[in-house]
Image (cartoon, rainbow, N blue to C red):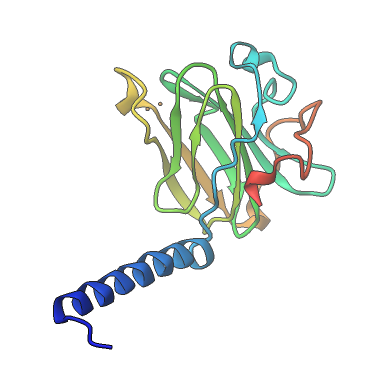
Amino acid sequence: MNVDLYERIWMWGTAGMLALFFGSTAVAAIGRQFQPPSHVETINPAAALSDPRFASRGVWVDDQGGVHVTVIGMMFVWLPDHVTVPAETPVTFHLTSTDVTHGYQIVRTNGQTMVIPGYVSRFTTRFAPGEYLIACNEYCGLGHHAMAGRLTVVPAAEWAGPGTAAPAAPAPEGGDHGSH
Ligand code: CUA
């Protein structure tokens, strides 16, 4: 079969781009452990501050010893805006917003999710010891640039423990299919 030179160039070019895009998706998913969006669990944003899942915020430990962080985003602050977690330990973040869409990005880590009113975002990751900036990376209004927080990661042996009690109504395990 005779394939015209230009057609051949386009075919190989297309194949190369497909390989590049599939490859970069695989690297992000496997190598860097990026996770798909988790917006499956819903919540009433107007009542998020008093919702049992978000009424006590901060770092807590479940009855299996798993470390969790519960955070609410609102114009223009993270509640709480500073959390301390143990290093090299899986930490599960639970986030929601009371107003508009925010973005929770732990800079220079793979910890990042959109925070959308009406939904609970979740991701699990682990960190090397250090101080990390938490930035809002979705434009949310005039104070967007000031919406920042801090994550302190200490060696597990030096961790002082959770700062708050486990929520009265923990998020159902396995109930959201988006985060696994
Ligand atoms: Cu919150 Cu930008």
